[in-house]
Amino acid sequence: MNAKGLDRAIPTCKGPAPDTRTPRTKAPAGACDAHCHIFGPGAVFPYSEDRAYTPPDAPYEALVNLHRILGLERAVIVHASCHGSDMRVTLDGIARAGQDRLRGVCVVDPGVTDADLRTLHEGGIRGVRFNFVRHLGGMPDMAVFDRVLAQLEPLGWHVVLHLDAQDIEELAPRIAAIRLPFIIDHMGRVKAKAGTEQPAFQALLGLMRNPLAHVKICGMERVSSAGSPFRDALPFARALAAMAPDRVLWGTDWPHPNIAGDMPNDGDLLDLLNDALDGDAAMLRRVLVDNPNRLYWPEESRA
Image 1 (cartoon, rainbow, N blue to C red):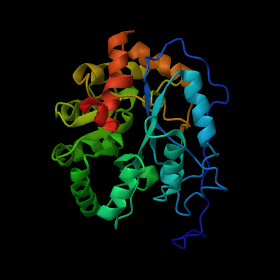
Image 2: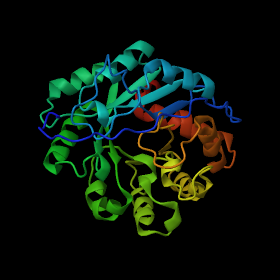
Image 3: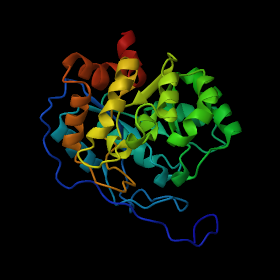
């Protein structure tokens, strides 16, 4: 029985591909995986009793090995919903690597205080993520959403929005009114089979005209309708990169929780990003170095 008194079976999800391929693409110096997770180990960092899924452990050491193979020197740990608002696993990873290499995005409770946020800032957190997707609980309390965003402004943080594609049009006016930088995860989880003219993607492109808007052109395995090698997702990434070349980021999404179809290999995903950018080395540097640095290591750009 979980903390809410609900007797339910918690679904599990698959683990990542066991053997990461070395990519053909050479990442530039300082390249950042701007979206990855650490799961557990559960014996040290327990999963939330109210979680929507139980992942296999994917600990810090495995993430370090992944980045070694891919040639990535920095990363942003996006705190996963399966750990609830207990930030210990993410803060531990940042502390072990050092804030010159890792920064993080947190999940917060409705009653989060300014002092709580300052403590998280000192631990390397630079943003808050809100899940809107149905399989992770759906729409958050929007009064809490508005209050937390107001609390973030003095810190210079941003907000990360995890959306279902079918909700982008309805939410677009509220998103457009956000007064701090925001990031939309996984290209809005649009579906490739609906094409780039689908209303959800057109609404996403419209949001990207806002200078505060950022988007992660990752999650191609989630956008793809055809499955591996996920190339039907490329037109969406190309369109977003063309729309806002200084406001697109990329991450592995390792260890790829809740993938229903083909599990990607992260080496292939880095090559897929390079293909989406048509092999443009300068653009690859923007996506992997310059753009994430402005959000997560802004002190370097001011130095």
